[in-house]
Image (cartoon, rainbow, N blue to C red; front, side, top):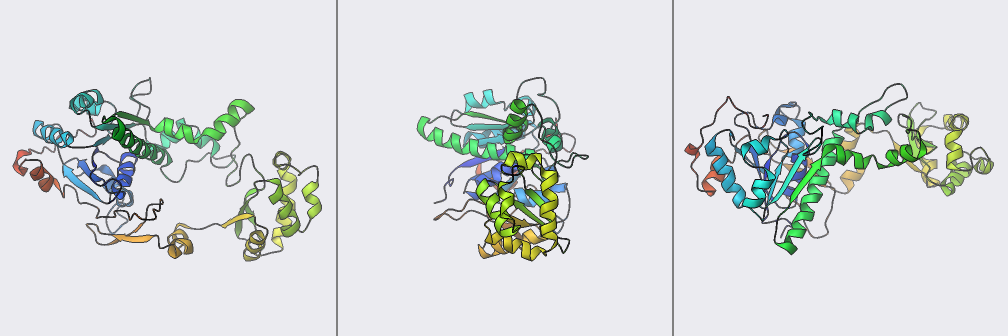
Length: 394
């Protein structure tokens, strides 16, 4: 039996944060009923067409779900959703601020109506405060959380290359729901969970927050290097390739000096004999490392670092990741079905000794509307879908 088998999740979801949370619940066996707007569905379906005509975001986030189209501005659709929620365990939504309240599905209403229901709302800034109604896209949250201020080079602040604020919020929604399910097993009652993208990413900003608040200065933007550890980051080798490495403690520093730089005296040099001194004097230390690495090619440097037990990595492309030998050797790739055929998919990163995860098809828009309505006692003719309204945006 899968861990979440028998758990029904209903989600008014779009984009990344909520779909990321619910897909992970689906991976563990939960039934996820994804409520989508008529005709177009989740707008993430149309972010791009790179996966044989489907969106890369949507393919990533929406396997193993049932798609039901409801126009929640129509009374018939709200009646249907209410009936489905009466038999659900979890309700997740990441609509615009106040949208579910206007539809009649606010947490306070649902908590009173369905005491067993776990209600999870994901928003940019939370359910109250002066920022409550402010639009919150991933880039904007990265800016508000200070991430962009410490990412990039000295001259060019940069955002993360992935939707890190959405992912952080989705992860806390996922773990929060799992925690609430455990609590409900004891209390027999549901609960209300609130996840703010800003607060999720602020938690991930813990080290720079402490560094700045107590140290008096923000960590500097150092590109691929580290603001507070050295040597840590990219170094060019004799064949003009980059090798990344990281030295975390004085034992590793001594190994590095002796076995890689072949200069054991450097380890006890007063300019470099602690991490704080190496950070302060990185402009003096970098030429020494560069000079040693220029005499070797990248393969030789990687080999020396490995023998010295120094953490290291090559700079992989995304294609390199797709063909990574470690993923292949651990058999991490699977196949999932979709409206455009069979697609590759990575197994979820948590591996259970005796549990296999669910990796069912990616749904078409409204693919399961008729079957789900029939299950809950409604005919498809009950719906009067309108193209003029969009509850997900209002």
